[in-house]
Image (cartoon, rainbow, N blue to C red):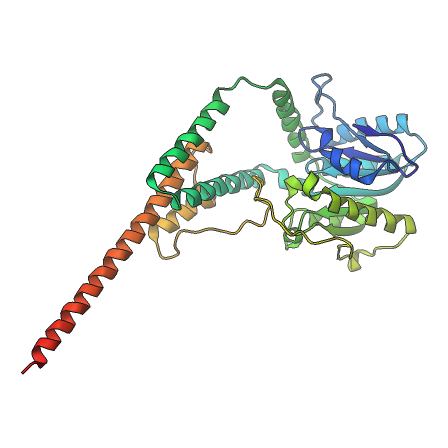
Length: 366
């Protein structure tokens, strides 16, 4: 992907973990013809070349391509998701080679430690728990016939995906993803003596312990730009939100061109006044980074607590569609049983009260 026209400092974008440079397509279109934009495809993404399993090697590969194509330019380096770690190291290497780096922009890019085995397992468990909650909500509000139809349709979709022949493109992307994640797990970021700009999907990413905010400890100058409410990381550069993200990027570019200093101690989330607030919220994605509300069965139910613990990530079972549906069905039936017991208990209490009043009336009669 390339948009070579324009007189501004060129943007070189490192894609996410699977190497798909088209993740920047909508952003490049929104920035217009005056902004040169180039996607950096890692070796092996197209099925040719050897996969690289070190962040330093990937950064060196991209640095060689950039210097050969635009040797005397100042550069803007961007990274999306896992590509943020590679973009960070790429900017470090270019700076060491004497190049001018206007700034580095990281879009929903967690710090490298977030790709460790334990954080990734936690993310997978959270995604699985969200699927269980989604199925449970649907089943709990459906009739028996609707439940049977819903489960039958979901199992049919699951079987179709399982039995479908493998897509060669997806197989190759899976290999690139595995190599990229393995490289990031072995990488420790070192100090970057330049401008680092963090583009966060929404305000939830400002919470203490957010995996993106750790980048502030390894750069000379940082500034944060926060996306609209309801935006999640997986949707940040898609059509629904990309216009707002492009506004933030232009604001960042304008500040850098004016040479406005951003002391680290004074860095605050910056959302331009012209950025409209989102009026709609998309469904929470599988990544679990959306503003989805927590859903629990009942804090006073032993079965509910046990199912919450399972949904919270303590299960060691398989993470497939069938298991999620079965657990969701169990949750919905438990809720129906609780409603039946509550109704029976209320009827029993009402009957006892009626008998008591009748007896009292009989004793008072002459």
